[in-house]
Length: 338
Image (cartoon, rainbow, N blue to C red; front, side, top):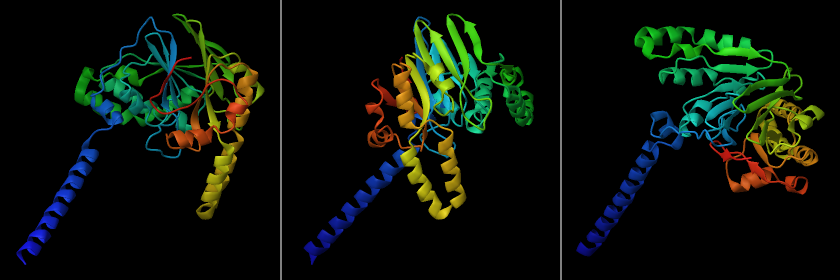
């Protein structure tokens, strides 16, 4: 009887220890800040950009409007020497910036005015203001930029008053009032060895919709914005060392539509319509080959797949048969050199 009782007691102790270990691991996992959270808390040290460096890209938002825990929405960082420019400012872009240790922004370029491409602007400006940045930031885009920025300014009017009233001149309220310039297609920026050209793309019925061509230190990076494959897009991307393009895998999207159709037919119809004005992966690969793109990076992934090797391989299935260069499936926080 004694040995049996001891055996039962030992089992209970073992079970308790196992339960305690599970609890401790769970607590650690919950309490340990992610890389993104560390950035917000200032644990990630500020990254110093090298003024002698060339042109490169950091993907800060590779997702779409549907919520995704590991993908912010449209936001691409262009690094030219020691300067950082953003193409679009989607939801949670500010978190990606913090996680990368990037603190200063030298300008913003907008491709079009779907909200998933600009909704993060207020968060970015607010955090720059909290950091004491007081200079107005430059915002450029096609027609509509002034309306978007004015709308966000109106949204933050009460908040700005509270913060200035509380913190005085310690809060950089100047950054909350961007300098906005609306452009037609053509060269929109030419300073310090960096030339930026805006070109029209095809995202009907959204007009205007544009992409950007960045040229610096002998390299060219093109960012597509949202677009179908079309002649204007092809010409804008011609000869790029790196093309950062949105893409939809139409086959996967059809599956997503079928799943949505079981419970939400209206959403299924919207998914089907979403295919119509984005770049099909196979059409994109064909275009990139035809216009001499040297490297292709995919962002704004539709559907918004998990960042795993298997999912990414499925997303770009068939593209390598049509395009001879490297294909990179974007993940938030990824640096890419042309």
